[in-house]
Amino acid sequence: PMRTSLKDTVLAHDRQSLALRQVISDRILEEAQAIAGDAGMAGAATQSAAGDAATEIVAAAKTVGADLIVLGRSGVSGIAELLLGSVLRKVLHLARCDVLMVA
Image (cartoon, rainbow, N blue to C red; front, side, top):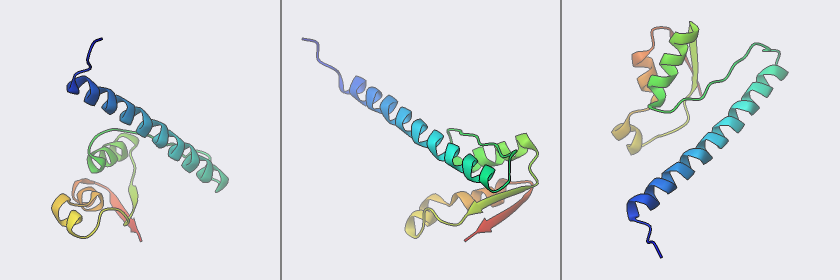
């Protein structure tokens, strides 16, 4: 029988992980759009992207001509925030529009 190489195993795992993340992302965005619709924001749209979160958020805001980006403060904290930097901090640095932080 043919033995699967470690590289093939890792690549298969990466594909499965990416597919699962996409399914989860789609579900979260569907729920967010439903909540926005229930709150009277019928024109709310969602978007999913892969890559550096801050860069993707700023690019999406620029694409739609947003004049405000709203982000939550939760996420990485403590030593991880110092080492990695936070998405909020990067968005504040990169954005060319106002950014509102929600605690």
